[in-house]
Length: 221
Length: 215
Image (cartoon, rainbow over all chains, first blue to last red; front, side, top):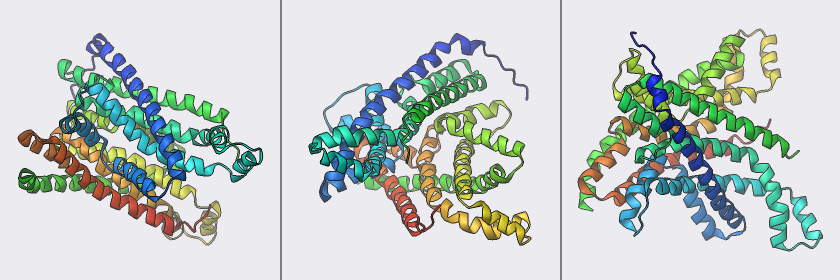
C-alpha cells in the first residue's frame, strides 16, 4: 500500500475535466430536448392511432430499450454511414443516438402521463366547446407535463450519466477527459476520485434542483 | 453473408462470455443486495446509513466510470485482478445497489401489522423474515428484479472496453476483419434484443399475475 496521492497533475489538466463536464451536460440537455419532442409526438400519435402505427412505435421503443447503449452508439457512428449516405462527427452522431434513446424511454413516460389525465378534464373541455386540438394543447398536455415531471427529471439524470458512453467514440466529455489524464499522467486513483466526485455532485445538484421544481408543480391526486 | 456465417461460432463464444458475466453478476448481486437491503430496512441506524450512502453513491456514478475505477484504480491500491473479474466486480457493485432498492421497495410495501403480528406469535427475527415478510415481499420484488437483469446484460456490453471478448467485443473483432459494420451490429442488436425482450416480457407477465396485490 505504498500509494501517495498527488493531485498536482490533475489540477494542471483540470480544464479537460471541467470542459468535459460542461460538454456532458450539454449533450444531456440537447438529447432530452430532442428526445422529449420525439417522445411527445409519438405518444400523442400512439394513443389515437390504429394497430399498425402502434406496433411500429412499440417496436421502436422495445428495440431501443433492450439493446445496450454502447452498441447503439457504435451502430450509429460506425454502421449507419456505411449503409446510407451521411457523414457526421462523433459528437453529432452521439447526440443523434442519445436523442433516439431518450425518445424511446420518453414515449412510455408521456403515454402513461396522457392516460393519467383525468377523464373529467377532457369532458369539461368538450363541454366548453373546445376543438380536439385545443383540448390536446390547452387541457391534456399541461396536466400531462405536471404528472410526468418526476419521470422527466429521472430520465434527465440517467441521460447525464449515459453521456459517459460517448467517450468510446472520442467525444471529449467528462469520462473521456478522465481517461485522457489517466493515460497521460498515470495519476489514476486521483483522476478517478475527482471525476467520481464531479459526477456525484453534479448529478445530485441537478436532482435537488429538479425536485424543487417538481414540488412547485405537483399534482394533488 | 458467408463471412457472417463463418463468424457465428466466434460470436457464440462471445455470447457465452456475456451470459457468464451477467449470470455471475446477477447471482452475487442478488445475495449481497438482499443482505444489505434487509440491513437498510431493519438494521440499526449506522448499518442503514452505510448502506444508504453506498447505494446512493454507486447509483450516482455512470457504470462505465465504475468499471474504469475498478479496472484502473484498484490495482494501484494493491488489489490486482484480471480484466474479467474487474468487470464482474464493477457490475456487481452497480447491480447490488439496484437490488438494495428493489428489496427496500418490496419490504416497504408490506403492511407494518404483518411484522407486529409475527412478533406477537413469538417468531424470532429470522423466522419473521422467512415465514412472514419474504413470501409476501417476493411478489413485489420479482417483476422489477427480472426486468433489472436486462440492465446487467446491457451493462455487460461495456466490459468489451477492458478487452474482455464478450458478444460486443466479438462483434467488433469480426468487423475489424470484414469491414462490414452494419450487418454485424444489427445481428448483435438482434441477439441482445432477443434475450432482453424475453426477460422484460417475463417481468411484465409476472407483474400482471401479481397485480391483485394492492397497497
